[in-house]
Image (tube, rainbow, N blue to C red):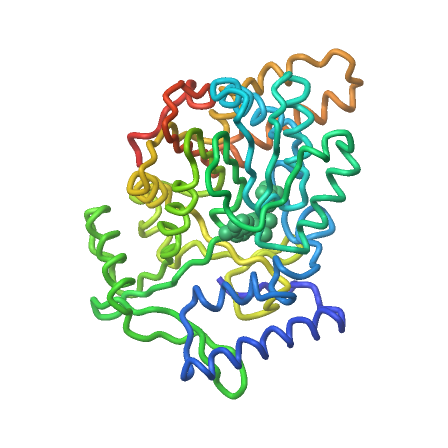
Length: 393
Ligand SMILES: C[S@@+](CC[C@H](N)C(=O)[O-])C[C@H]1O[C@@H](n2cnc3c(N)ncnc32)[C@H](O)[C@@H]1O
């Protein structure tokens, strides 16, 4: 895939912002003797303080931003999620809290809290942990506007709590964790990274180090096939330590990740021989991470087998894995759509449209999956009662 010609032009401010981040990348590459791995580049592009896509002030979400997420466009998504949260909170008792990782604009937090209140299951505290200081401000504004009476229950954390009992939720956060890119050349594993040529950022390959090499060989082992020459893809090398740190603080409860992705055997196939990396810029997508640096989102699909393996290593159980469609149906999406009392025709149509977008296979219904990881938590989770896909992991 190449950069589509119709990518919108940058304003002078945007161009200056991106140039500043490219300068930072250039300095970093020079001090690393001419090459950094893709994960380090992605980390700069997304999270460099004051400059990275998530750290700085780009609009990001919604029609005026670069992409939309389910809670942004379909409030019924968060209402269904609240039903699952309420079960877990009730099971765990008064000390149970909610922790949302990567809360974006804060819309999901506001809708979840409002629904939990309706269900009589408000947690004592709703904590938010986000890498982006800019987004924290936006989250606070959203919550103050939509659920001002619940704002006092919301607490922003600077790091993971020492101990936590409750429900941890993260929508579209796994896909934003950095990835390492690799390519198979003459049967060997190369690492794709970023270098400078004639003053410009370029993708360059070096022979992979032992960690990346071993991880790629593990993929071949797990899928039962040798990846062919020319095959390019990505691996989230930081996933296991990240999950480990979250699992360590979870005393009792459930971690729920929602994201687009596949089990490993379906991920690393010929169909995806150029990997799944995608950049989002004003609702256009392409695969060139070296343009519009700091102004576009960079993501890759989630290997849910890797999530499950890392979680088990960290002492969690896989409490459920299914498609977003089946999860939402299990949480009562049908009831929300059927119970239209008090809604006018436009509102009803809007609700049906939301339900279709969230569940149809060609929309978000199958591309997005939900995985639940439990720790000292045995109760069944209703979101996984309709269809259990754990055997595919
Ligand atoms: C694609 S956005 C999703 C936002 C929101 N959950 C939604 O569904 O609209 C990714 C979010 O994850 C945050 N993020 C990325 N890595 C993170 C990490 N390691 N810990 C916490 N938040 C993170 C970003 O700052 C951003 O808020």
